[in-house]
Image (cartoon, rainbow, N blue to C red; front, side, top):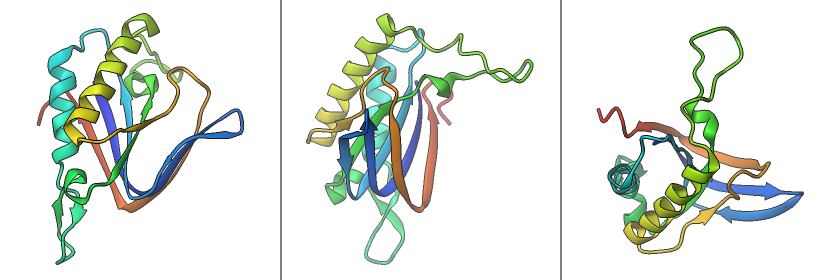
Length: 150
């Protein structure tokens, strides 16, 4: 699984000109799923996201997590995170899972994230044509790949 995690002061997902989900202070998480992903990836990524200390403490040092501030999370599926640009100028998405494999993993990830955060997470609509709007706070943007745990 690959994730782009952005600290935001607000974020929303619009589908068919209607706001589907929105959050204020929290994290926007774009997540891409590949066939090799499984429960271990889900659990590790979820734990990493809710425990990342990327919010300011009283001394304005990034030292507290989304869980500590009781912030919100908005998760949007994004297969393009698995784009390969090695050949030519047209990205290949061969590593991205097809919906029949990706949707169950995505739903398990949402359940795990809800469990770890101890509150519901907001979502986009898997496979929909979405408009995502955000106000990146900082800016703080973190890239995570469960297959490359540095």
